[in-house]
Image (cartoon, rainbow, N blue to C red; front, side, top):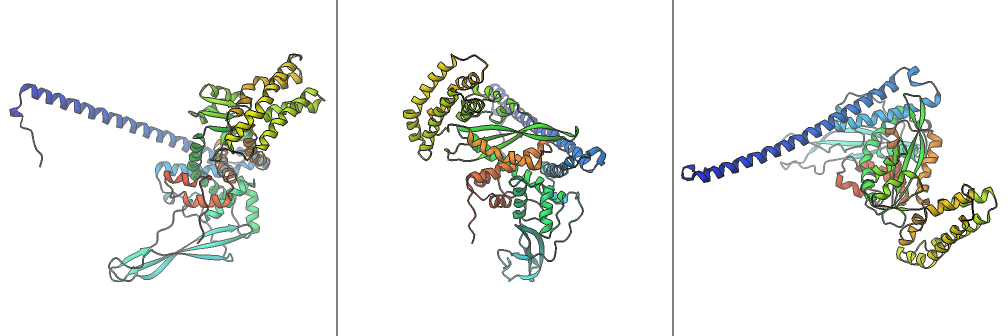
Length: 522
């Protein structure tokens, strides 16, 4: 029952005060509603713009994929783009489905129904029965049938089929039907097991086998899988794995020491029918930190703004080369740490071109610094820093005085002067590693993580688009981080693809490579 205030006993001042309070409350409520509506409008506008962007991108990709060949380009090398376009098509459609909350199973299929899996392949039955076969009324359920779905699995050199059997149980008394639900899968109603999906991803991004080569390998094993089908799987997996890569990026940016490096990759521009230079940026934690991993960021440019956006808000020690693109970040709480391998390289190049006693002496001194690092490689950071203070700092102090004296005798512009200038101009950054035993002496660790891209671009030649480049960066981030942590990359990817369809945001941390533990086989 609602209680009402008797206003007849209130004075004029009390009435005015009550009216003022009501007006204030109404104003606050209106302001709150207005703020909520504004936020809702912004969210709707964001989804609308994103929807339009994806729809436009989808139209361009379809025109390239299904348009006349004269428009698509005639060279054999250029037609390799078809695989990447198929992957992009699948990725865009998957993102559109997530954006609009449209179940994939209700969308109009883009391809004809798949053929039955070869009957001669070995099959393994996996039964999915209800947890209980007792009806709620107390009667025993009776099995009245079963639904069977088949998924294609692959072990190197041999295909097999998993038959997932979901039996149906019914109660004759109350006509209740019970059946185990369909397990969520990274590709709804798809034929591949997560093991096969992991195999395709590992082959493409770790073994650097283009999809047309995988198609040939699988055909020899007895199963014809079209390149468009393989590309569809890769595109959808790339979308599903993106949140995990974002979580790994947040973990790395929570550390106070990072390596950074970048390398060029050719990217194809379908409209211009030629390649342009894009870049893969790599950010990794040093081996001295408890969290190990690397994150790749594919970008169409080498602009320093790319690095500043990736590291936005981050503060710590950044180990990098002398590339000017990093410089602007050093005024935002980022401390530059120089790479002695780069300084050494300048003197090594000088020694290769002519027998320079200055270069020979410089290389011997830098070699002494590396000997100290090798001797303390297994030591705790505190002990390593102490040894550096006692042994390395005196060497570096004397080396600086010697370089300064030698430079004063040289003419600017000579090879020797340039080698010395490189070290002296970066001296403050080069000696910063002495202050923290966790900081390595050089940037070689992240350069090693860049090598898979150098191997890959010799095989797949180019990235087809920014989207395909970033998809490659995402998958290679997880593969390489798994390797860094001593994991079987395929087993890791298989388990992640099994968990990711039902994983909540809070579950992603446990799926990161440095936290993942292989499931115990019963």
